[in-house]
Image (cartoon, rainbow, N blue to C red; front, top):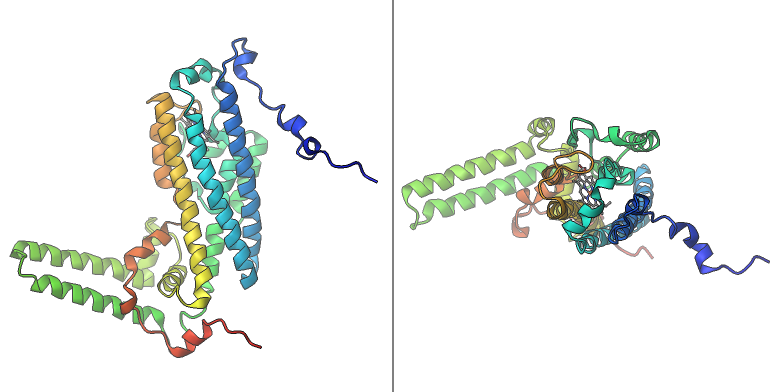
Length: 360
Ligand code: HEM
């Protein structure tokens, strides 16, 4: 018979609670707040571990040739878990902010050149989600992997080579059925709906007695630019140019599918895919929010000083937050939506195939 499990043994508390070693104490001047600084960072790393755990399982399910409908629910639950963890990651910043900048200065000098910039797990999360090397800022001229130990560099670079969530979601969207079944070509039907809408809006401007001629002309000119924007989305060649220029990332086909799912999200078969797309945006937004929150905290703690890792400090962090969006194409979708009443009517055969029905 095995011995009854004991709480502290199960959680390896001996080890876990013996890993908070103050640098300030090692230098002979223990600083009270350094304990908080260490515990908060360690708590982040534990949560990053959990996020990687969830992401790995999600990536595995997405890597199958088709995402089984039963697995879609699991993916949604795990994405939601990540989004919930992010709320803790964001809130935790406030706990660290109870340490004042003056308290931080009492031990900050001991930390150089270590920095959160070297968090391998954070980089692994970014890479698994789909942040590309080309999206990243250099730090004092160095690429992000240069500041790692050999072991961490190798772990982070290995993940860079693996399919990311962005790529797997893109492939999943590209495989979406319904877009061109039989005679129905969603894209040209939608294009007509958009044009009808723009023409109606244009009429409202033309007929508005309150506008001066100059205002009217300016507003009509705005319509032309909206039309040009739409055309780029309808035309796969123009879309490719947008991707090449870096303004868009997702393939034309995947973008079409995401738009279709968003427009017809009330159809039973599209409800879960829509939920999944929303969660991807929640997670993207969660990381962006964390980055800005962390940048604000850094500004408050160190002002315009350089970071311990050698970056331009808060300025670097703000720029990094601007560039780190992964699912930016999904946010773009809202530009191209039309009201429900203007959506092309789907052929009955497609509506039928999107229904859930008990086959008893
Ligand atoms: C007093 C608190 C903190 C300050 C003043 C601070 C400051 C900074 C600065 C200035 C950078 C830019 C790189 C550098 O030059 O070092 C940075 C990067 C980073 N820090 Fe912090 N940080 C703090 C707490 C934290 C915490 C609690 C975490 C949680 C893990 C964290 C995670 C990161 C990450 C992941 C980066 C890389 C961000 C990127 O490259 O976009 N930091 N931090």
